Image (cartoon, one colour):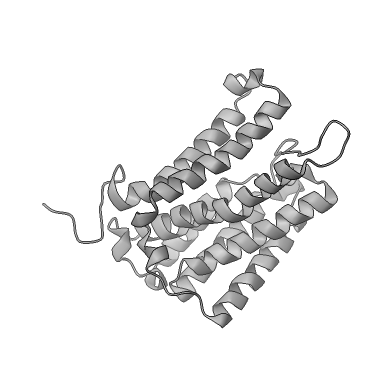
Length: 234
């Protein structure tokens, strides 16, 4: 039986694969980098930092290769003025929540994080710029394609491209937000962020709106990290 137009229930190919692959690649890097006895355990700190930078480059390359599949992005209308303001405002609020719920019951130990410092204690501008660019430009697109465009709608229907995000179920909203939280060491802030970005997508039906919001959060967070040197947030 032929697949319905615009949909594919097989997660190993087609529309689902295009949205899963960049996220899966990102998580593979995370797993390797966090494996105590893994191959990166023999690398120097400088090597590990550049591997983190390469992670963002690799994910961006996969997004570029698969870009033609992302109809919810290149066929979407540009967000309206009020939608831009809403996205930026929500993103700023999520940033505030992120640096508020950063310890105790609301977070797991995330380790020392990514430090772009040179041996003399100064910040390496190239490392800092590339890390911030990956965080603010690549991660929001990759995660919103996976968590909101794919998973939120796929929970309701396997032919997820046929699901209007404005009609997504409460169950899909709750499950996708909870799973998004589980990806982050600051799980409570992650839960609130997942709910905020999911709400934006369900309210507007335009994936660019949560992407802009997510990018706002990450850009503010990255800038704050550089200003305060709280590297554990990276």
